[in-house]
Length: 544
Image (tube, rainbow, N blue to C red; front, top):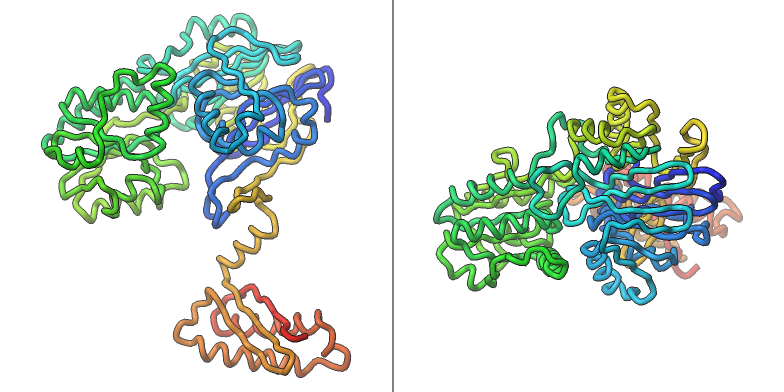
């Protein structure tokens, strides 16, 4: 589909899920992409780490795509850039901090020279085809979080990106109520808005309050070694922890490459310039326990991150009973078990742990209901389009918007093609929208044969039948719960296969497909009889 004299919106990722944000706007024959994110692999994709939106729809229309504008540098908004930007073949646009992190990703991928990355180091309007675009700074849990004000011949769009309201953000200067009200005064056709925290009845809270709580918490553990784990990308939190280290007379030690990268990038962009000098691991361990503050990656339970290795006592940073770990981050849904494993390891060693349930040492970067209501009153859109949430989040934001007087609400999901103007807004079509996975070094469909088979193997195991052409049968299995009965199972399964093959008549005995199927079914029935499982069965014909 080529956009006509109209304004279209279509999410390929991030609507119906939290993460993997990819949004398209169509107008007068051209497409604009906002963000190109990813999410991390989950249990439904065993053996994979990264999940991407299927971009087939826009790849088929890449000649009409005029650019990719990035709102901020979180992985769920930029993580897919190194994998797809070169193929899409259009320029990228980002503010300096985001651009520097993106460029590092492109350098690592080896395609930085093939991709045009435009750094927008001001808030002036720039044009891409029929779209006029201006960055509008908003508070978030990373430096340079931005909304986009997109003007088109059919009306203005306020695309929030990820955001919150914060009177004391510590890093950056968000747009004020007066500035946002002025945007509303100029007229906003559609507000495309983050839904993540819509069920939170309270405002998300301020980084300033977190600074106070962290200072009090660290000071309270006098004489103890303190580790703080937080999201590496939260530059304001890193600024706070540097100030806390100074105020409590502790040396600062950083454990984790992603923290090193963010500090390096932040300082190159003018942030974290007064961060205290850091000490290495050996120095940190030689200091009196109460004279070091350690920043560590791994608050989401990542197995290879610093905190997991500290918990397992395989890291140069060592903790003892009554030392302290502060979790200055929230649990991302899906990570509860991994985080729990690390916390249990720490608890077994009598390490004290403090989370945001005990102290206000973390606040969200997404808006609660009071913040959403405030933004509605300032922007006053004609249409509300909830994004960045599961269906329950987006539906709830739709209800909230209507209760606040927004007359038209369009709740869409990935692949829904929505016309915003002219005429009544609503879904007009569906386009392909699925998931891709990074499986080893190959990007493949999440519902492809390889992943379907891997799920089946994980669920039911594998049996292998070898027929050597001389009437001999050999059976092996992997993943069946038959430890004590394995030999008896193998003997009986082999006999069952022989019996099944002996029952074949005439030409069937020489039909490879018939032979394979008979052996497969016999082995599978034997496995089910012995284990209750229905394994995948592979039949190998040797010397046939």
